[in-house]
Image (cartoon, rainbow, N blue to C red; front, top):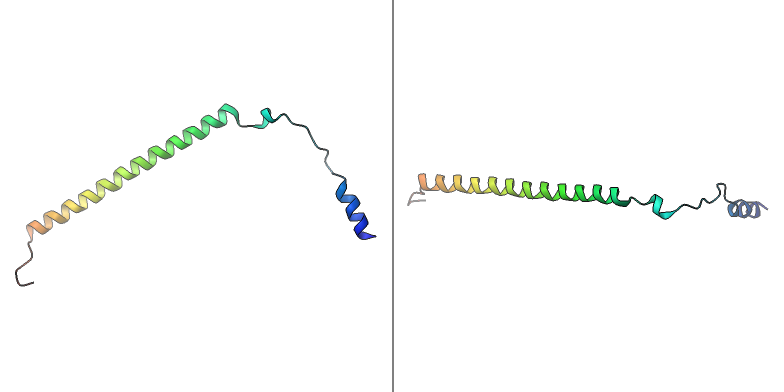
Length: 77
C-alpha cells in the first residue's frame, strides 16, 4: 500500500514543466566576452608573474656569483 502511494506521488510532478527558449537562457555574447576578458587577464597575470620570478632568480644568481668572486674558497678547504 505504501509503495503504491509513493509511486503514484512520484509520477506526478509538483511543478509543471516550463518550455523555455534555449536562446534566451544561454550566456550569449556578453557571457563569451566576460569569459574572454577573464582568460586574457589570467594570461597577463601568469606572464607577469613568470617575469618577476625569473628576475628574482637571476638577481639571486648574480649576488651568489659576486660573493664567490669576492671570497674565493681557500686552497686548504
